[in-house]
Length: 381
Image (cartoon, rainbow, N blue to C red; front, side, top):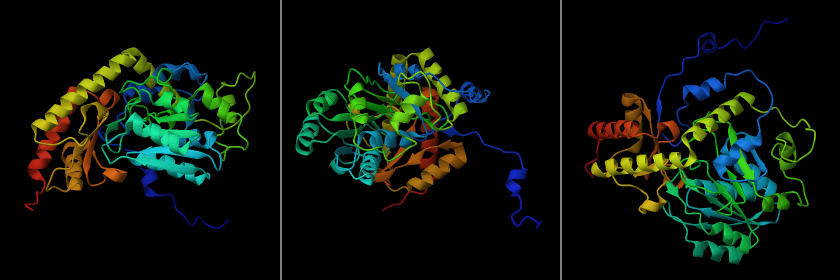
């Protein structure tokens, strides 16, 4: 036998050393030891779908967790509900509307968009006008637009979608658990989130729920979904949501990640959903007051539209935002981020989600920002 031409890398011959950092960017957030320990349990079978219903405030039977991140859940929603040639409408006020539009385009949908400037949102009248014009089978909206820091109002939109025979798809990756949301009461047909933000679980699992209206559309489609892995016919059986007595093998799920997700939901239940919403809102307001007292400006002008989990700060004039984030990481061991998509170069983004949402952490970030503005280079132009 010839000798190995590729030798073992030296990095794998050393212990794994992961530094502790304050994860105050738009996600992932810090994972409490209780949730990390849950992921160390022995590998066994599946979870029960009803544990997600409380978080979403839904009684939908078709409620489960996709094996993957929030992007996977977004594709699961779009790939199952949309067929080639269908009309799809996406609300674009940040990167997530852009991503949803591209996913729908890739499967041959006729995609139209309504566009608001970064930091803005849509009125119900604007949404109804677009629904009337384009007659989509699916309307996408990001509840928590983490790239711009917008919390989009939801009341009344689900009823508009029902009036125009359109499914209402909502991205709640950055908002679930941190801002009020009522899936059933607000007429949302498909709702998904990710594990790594307010839930404080490791990335890699994505809870999603489908209304009866959505299931009727999905299970009466003329063609198979483009993705076998995300086909809801298979996933419904995998999670025991289809009422069948036996399950057929579909894929090997990330069982230990599901354990962590389950524990993160138990933490949310212990605090109480309404208490979590209130805590995030109070901490966000405390943070906003501190920022404004420093002379910094908030990117989202209307208070009611500010996402309490991810705050966008107008990039300080005369500074290089990259230097600020690098200085804070190097000097204070705190991760904050610049903009994403349409907000690149315009903002700094600070995420205070789940266990990270506290006034003590706000004080830590404010202190780091003050230090950075004192020591980073400021242009005189």
